[in-house]
Image (tube, rainbow, N blue to C red; front, top):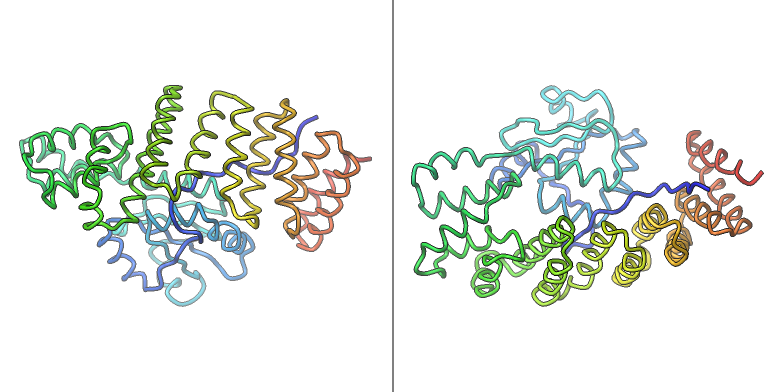
Length: 387
């Protein structure tokens, strides 16, 4: 029997906010200025008030914790109604033919990426990552560097540009720092902060050694976020090289140096790793650890986890038992028909037909309440399984 799993795996949230996107409240011109000041891209939600998919993103995607963590950190975020106010002027320069249209615009005014239509959480974060990767200012500094410019301003700007473009920067950082007699100057401390991109590196050790001084420049929160980012990068490297040693190193350093977020990070890192090596027991154990870090009302994450487990390990009885438990936690008290449909599908797969039918009928009732024919037909098609 094929599972009808609607969920997609969530992208890990490693930031500190518990809310969704914080949208910029100024004008478009002010957003451009702020983006240049912070050296960020502008994300624009070009919407219309009557648009159903726009409302869906506002309710279910922009409010997601992992989305807020990622977009608040990397973008200046702006909502513009394309049919009134400043939106009318905006769409003269940036035409819109469908709602929502998701713009990623550099502070120069150049469109980096444009997406028509609504996205779910994983694809929305993926789109943001793709937009960041398309901005590459490293060439501006590479020529001067190759000609021998080793001024702290140039090296810092070069490393920062390489990082933003997703290019290797560790060698540039290491070469410069090894040439310095005193690492505690403000310029060198800033470079240590910017150059800390992996936990399994000498530079990470320097950041920890001089953590208090770096926090005095950037803030404790930003330094902890940088520590987690570096640990995350090493955890991905662990997956790439199938190295449990690197996985353990990333987890140990996160637990030690960012303990507030360490447990959630450890569980997520293990989930990534054991998903890749297809270890059902270790993956589900990590899922259970992660669930303990969630709020009980975080139905979306329970829903996504249930779907992920069922898609990956449907042949493992222990994994499917956990998938059923998480799907139930997502569905209980929810008015989202997809949560109940997902729960029904897992129950049916686990051989609990009567309970599965009960959940499916609840999904049907909730789908009818949406008055969306596509939703209603989707549930009715699924109910044919019980005939």
